[in-house]
Amino acid sequence: MSASSGAGERAAAIAAFLARAGWADAEPRPLAGDASFRRYLRLSRAGGTAILMDAPPPMEDVRPFVRIAGLLRRLGLTAPRILAHAPRRGLVLEEDIGDDTFAALLDRGSDPETLFAAAVDVLIHLRQRTTAKQLATLPAFDVPRLVEEAALLTDWFLPAWTGSATAPELRADYLARWTAVLGRAPLGPPTLVLRDYFASNLIWLPDRDGVRRCGLLDFQDAVAGPAAYDLVSLLEDVRRDIPEELGALMYQRYLDRAGIDDRDGFAHAYAVLGAQRNLRIAGVFARLDRRDGKAHYLPFMDRVWALVDHDLRHPALVPIREWLDRHVPAAWRGRPPSRAAA
Image (cartoon, rainbow, N blue to C red; front, side):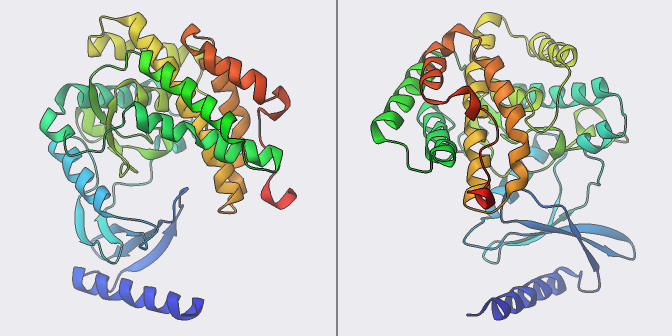
């Protein structure tokens, strides 16, 4: 099948889906995409708007998004209502909850403390309200999976610098160290972890009450995992600088309102998960460039490595720090050469 015939077939499938959903007469307007193969369109017609998610199989699967949206709404949070969906076609028509992302509002000068406090309160709500039965429906974000994802640094970031695959024994040593470090970390009982929980994926809805003021996007990868992970995602945002004072204030808000008694243990888990997440992201951004031709993520690498350096101050991460000092020179701790320059 040619590219043009494939595109035509996809357009016909979308038109048929929208006709069945009663939105055939809507005017579409493209919205900003993300790091996936999904694209989004805002549909406008007399009487309102909606969002079309176009997530073509087999690259994407919309079923987790639909399932998690329902779960979040049952928990009393704001996720878009699903108006129609066709999983086999990779199409979802969802409620339009607006454009006011926390990131956009922060850029326009909105009060960061108000926004981040709302985001922290959602995480506390998830920790306190998600049941064991609900968690059992989610993939486990446990030590083996965390270690597996840590391999993105050796599988993509290092080769972007060296020009060759990482030696198997080097990779095995890195993952063995992560297995030990994560195995010793007090990760605590699992909760619902949204994973991509940062300012660009949160929508401000000031007319709603309580935790519902914070609208949620991009949650299809939700898992049952350590509660500290999403707090790290929010406060160690690789896409924007979070003032140190604000980060400390929000971290303390979480501890106080979530009733964390073992604060040293939580700090231990937070640092370990922060290092794992940020080193994984270094691999993800390298992969987006090398495999997918998305070099626009590379400018974030300097911030990624600054966060890694901060996380590595915790003594629990000495084995990871030693490995990095041996195999990732200081000159490499930033953006690798882009694919275009390679």
